[in-house]
Length: 248
Ligand SMILES: Nc1ncnc2c1ncn2[C@@H]1O[C@H](COP(=O)(O)OP(=O)(O)O)[C@@H](O)[C@H]1O
Ligand SMILES: [Mg+2]
Image (cartoon, rainbow, N blue to C red):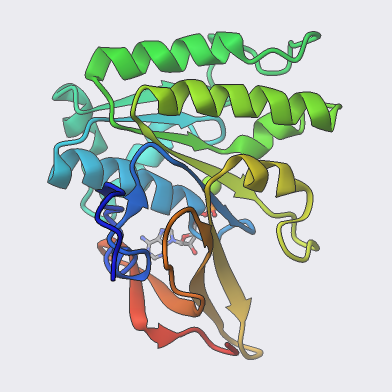
């Protein structure tokens, strides 16, 4: 039986809500981890797009890796028009990608390891569109700038707490280095998240790979403990709740 006291936020990923009692707990911090190319950015952007388009929830997409033009172009392949929603004030893209000529906050310039500049920018965007969803893609870029694990944990925790205090559901992505087993160096990020989802794209033979998704943890939820098949289709990411991924 599902717990009616926890309000659920529909993920916008077909098949995923069925694995997690209807959606992410509202106001929680969810980490999406996976190696390069596993679909983290697509999943995160689809969460923002579907939230705005289908569920009337404005969303802020903070991009630290890919420039907005590239994201818009790639998502258009899935018939997701980010630009239209941006014009309607339903989504707001915060461009902190390296390609931007003048970056409003330079993540690397923190002798004091302080993320308050970034926090202020995100909070402004949340207020501007009355956001209900926030995505930070990807946390890994920030993590490399911090030398101390303790300060890193403290700063991320503060940032996540400030964002979720507004009632927003926060989705963070984190890249697992190619050789790492498990979550590797990103255990810190897992620690601050109340939910962790892992994406895989494993080699199943000499000539093919297969995508799958695992809900590693989710606060207050009786989630699936299996690894489920996932595909990137012409409409974006889709999960097959009844299908168990290869080798699992
Ligand atoms: N239109 C598409 N159709 C099918 N697969 C796609 C499409 N666009 C991208 N992909 C797949 O998605 C991968 C990139 O997903 P992305 O979310 O950027 O990964 P990550 O953020 O985890 O590095 C590509 O490597 C490719 O395999
Ligand atoms: Mg990415």
